[in-house]
Image (tube, rainbow, N blue to C red; front, side, top):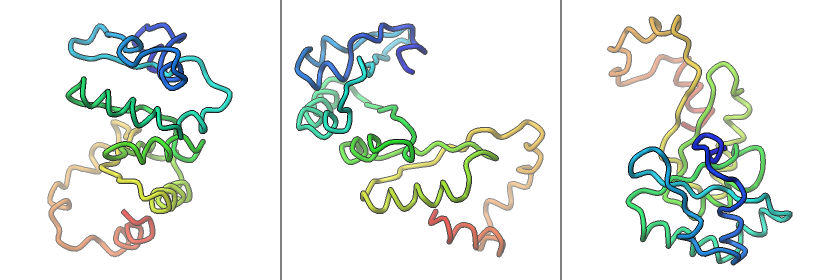
Length: 162
């Protein structure tokens, strides 16, 4: 999706770097955003998990860390395919994104289990989908400074493993 968002060609990218068809720096594309470059996914391979499990991915991340100040990897949902678990082991951490009112508690629990099973480092969670009408529910900022969560909140936090 990043190639679409930034109006970049989708024909070359990470897949071509991993297969050795293209050098890392030749696959990087500048964007209209100053100081932001993108490595698109490239052509979908027939064996994505196998390709991502190769030693070439470690080299791509080493090259990226050497060439850029910050490296962010946009991947598919953790529960959709195995790719994020493979990639996640090569990164400093995962930023999980969920949609309020859409992501089920069961999906959050499955995600927690996958993260624990694969020993992935979660550095944060982004919760999208807060409606403007819900903003008033967060007006009591003092609630954030309580030392002990309300009993119903504590129960959910323990179950989810947050």
